[in-house]
Amino acid sequence: MALFKGRPGAQSPSLTEGSIVRGILSFALPLFLGQLLQQLYNLADAWVLGNFADNGAFAAVSSGGSLTFLVIGFFNGIAIGGGVVISRYYGAKDEENVVRAIHTNFLFGIIASVLSTVVGLLLVPQLLLLMNTPESVLPYSLTYFRIYFGGVFTVILYNICMAIMRSLGDSLHPLYYLIISSILNMALDLLFVAVFDWGVAGAAIATVLTQGISFLLCLWRMCRLTDYTRLDFSKLRVYPGILSQVIRQGLPTGVQNSVISIGNLVVQSNINSFGEYAMSGHGAYAKIEGLVFLPIMAMSMSLPTFISQNLGARQYGRAKQGAVFAFSPAWCWRS
Image (spheres, rainbow, N blue to C red):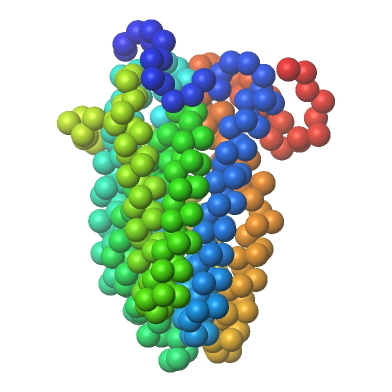
């Protein structure tokens, strides 16, 4: 194990030092803002289609969240496990295993992207039929999802890079990149849908392109770091011991995501049977409902990094205090 001689060019201060409350909240705030931007990202698609395309296009896009999450949610759950493993080694100042975990996780993301593309393109037409998608909406849905899953690698690799950066304590740069991509997404939506009249195809292309920009910005940042956490393509390989830890940590989340998605698909199938206007109404409601859960999601996303870093540093009391604070934010704390 290499000696930990400071962090020139490291991504952010360690979460194993300083005020617990300040550390968690300062890490969670960018996550909250990022999730808010992600919701606004989706709302922008819905708003543009609702105003500049017909109702079938709006119904196809606004009701597709459960289907996309069914395919990519499992792999994103595994990515969370990768973040936990990286955080633990980072907290333990185990440079060698941090490097191995980063490159194993990134290579896993590439493999997951290929699998998701194949599974999505093969299964989506059958799933849309099983979901009782109305004939008036089906052509729109097929167009949207074929483009989306043709470029789904941009979505998965962005999430993989974001998980790696977050596991090292950096929740700010993914937020910056999401701000850029959200602005571009709105501009491209308007250009492709309102000006070029590409309908759902325009919305799908805008999503894939802007997610790709987010991924490239994260990749650019990760490859420019000057310390041992820098991503080096020559070091990409799967370390079996690391991968088994990633799967062991992430598999429960991946399975949970899949089970939730299947349940949501059953609900969506019943809604679809009422026609495209019911689909549009439920889709619009779901996007607004998502805003309510953002604070909870931000806290739940920040905890794995905080706790894993402190467990790696063997600061078990600090890890427990962080968990108690997250579950009981009204608790009286001293810095």
